[in-house]
Image 1 (cartoon, rainbow, N blue to C red):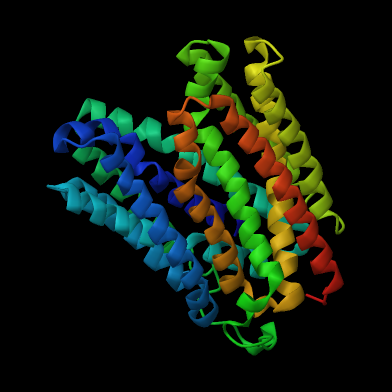
Image 2 (image 1 turned 90 degrees about the vertical axis):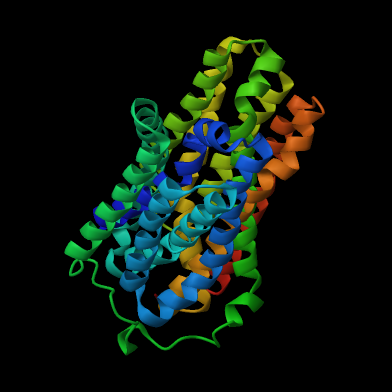
Length: 394
């Protein structure tokens, strides 16, 4: 179960980079500028964010597996739509399909893991879930740019479609293992409250806010760290890029390590707070430029490891918040809504930090990332305290 869910999650992350990996070819063939081609990702994340908040209700009603089939099939279809695109509106339509397919995975994945994986293994399950997502991000640019360079970007679109189709076939072949194909039964307990009552709960909005804040900080580093380091530290592009690579690799290592601690006790909020505090200090040191360029990869690796380490504990924290208030029948809607904060964060990060970059305020972006991680600490501690107060047997 853990491997299968991780595999399909990695597939969804693969499609996050389907368009960015092919930007140079799309811009050349369709005569697009950076703003226009970037609109494809805005469409992707807006559709994914809205769809993620809504798809959780569908998961709770009809079960996770059929929703998984639909999402994976839409991802495959988006690759074909990209390959067949003849103009800019058709590119936007392909991005729409990809976002619609992507929106189902967090509600589906966390519903399956929470229902089918024993509590002692949940930390490892969430760790694998995060790791496979990072692997999907890593594989897509290498694979798609290689294919586009060797043949054509349309062939790369077809290759992406095949990745989605294979994932769909794997999920169908393992439908008995992914045994949450039907709607929840009475054995899962009666739902607590009405369908939309969870939106009246401050804990749910705090979880949503937490994901939005953390993703804003990550989006700042992901999008702008390379030009920032070039301007502030005067390093070459390869060295600046290596610092981001160090962040991503250390984040994967932190995610793997965090899985061993996530399910232990009820201190998930404190673990998240400590990890993000260290990450914030690293970001502040980077922004102050008190150390030489030699320490760029080291500081980025420290930050990445701490952010990755907090991931599995963060996911356990959301689980506790969901079950303590609404019970297990609400996994889909709670996870779907709270994790839509990720998509919102990715969508608005360029709007928040882009003007700073255009104005030459490069260190302001790093100070902003540090401040956001400190703000996330407060949110995580508040979620943890509220979940403990309302704790109920799972």
